[in-house]
Length: 348
Image 1 (cartoon, rainbow, N blue to C red):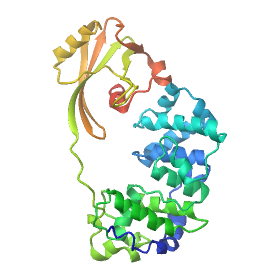
Image 2 (cartoon, rainbow, N blue to C red):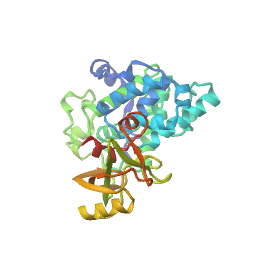
Image 3 (cartoon, rainbow, N blue to C red):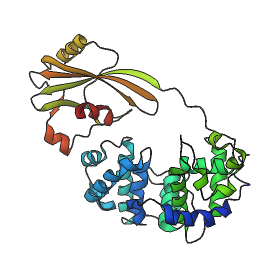
Image 4 (cartoon, rainbow, N blue to C red):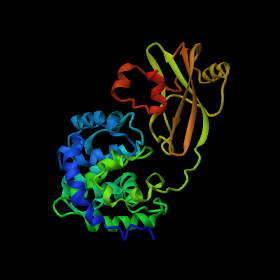
């Protein structure tokens, strides 16, 4: 068994809520219970640090302030607003879900966990967060932060990545949610896991409001919790990337409609290793009429299962070959959203 079923989670709200009231960081999405704004923040925060999200969140809402605006926005504009956040399927699912909300719910959010869970891109965690924060339902939002806190509190030695411990934790936490303060409890757990009981760092146990109940602290095993399945080694791929310049314009093209970074813009690239001369030869094969190799630079970008080891070749070209689209500064500002793996070559 996971150990979660027998832990007294019901004792936590009385300790955690006063701490949260005094210690919570002032984040913009905490200033509202409006479902649209909470939803956008939760989707942005997946796989992304809070500090990185703040600017994106404000800019996104200034352009797309409500469900109707999101449902109607052109995909190019949406992806440009999302540029640099990564995991672009999140943005596409936002638009798909917004369309359903407009068509089936009059632009409002359904007030049940099951109906929220059925929307594109909304998984168990996000549905739990929206339902508890916006509608005061006892629906836990279990992410890595909450799993880590629970594993330490209960000194759970089981692998928390497995389905059974998550199910046990969800049931145990749901029973502990305080009526009328469900949203605050969800956010307090998030805050504790993001600050005092964080990942890859020494937990600040002396400051933790739950320290009297923490079995891992009592047994000295807090650095051993949570137990997770070993991570798979990421596959390394060599990726020569071409920054082909003709005047102020740079060559871009669409990626395939399926697979990694599906349908997004990219800088031309190939697989394998190329020398500088081979890079010039490849540019000539594209009829880019290369005149000069200006520079070569090395960069690495890590995806979920793949590590790209990239060599960027900046090449001056004599003409705009038809194999690519050629975008100037204004297009890059307005509607050419480049994933970070390629955008960092232009920023450099």
